[in-house]
Amino acid sequence: MWAFFFRKLAEFLDGKPCQALIAPVDIFLPDDDDGAQSVVQPDVLVVCHPDIIKDDGIHGAPDFIAEVLSDSTAYKDLTQKKALYERSGVREYWILNPDSGSTLVYVLENGRYLPARELLRGNPVLSSALDGFSFTVV
Image (spheres, rainbow, N blue to C red):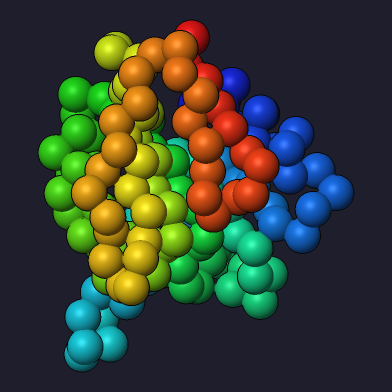
């Protein structure tokens, strides 16, 4: 599913200043005030500021991240990664559930994620960070 999602996203961004990337890509995000960093590898991400793209990965918050839920990653995606992405300033975070076909959408506003919107299979999910992009889980 995530390869199909990535392909649709990359096609949408073709010719635009933002770049879609697919795992494995290391993202280095500040973890606390002491300068410690967390390194994560989301399934799909979009970077609109090329200056954060370095040879060893992405140094700073991507504009958009999507994770595809699995039994082995669900807890971490829904708790730890969500909190890290929020603290780091990721503008939009989608969690795609291939089993149910639902998509959870978190949008950053004033430094906090608004309560998640859940869109069910067959309903288009519109991005607020990537103006004009939508995806429908079928």
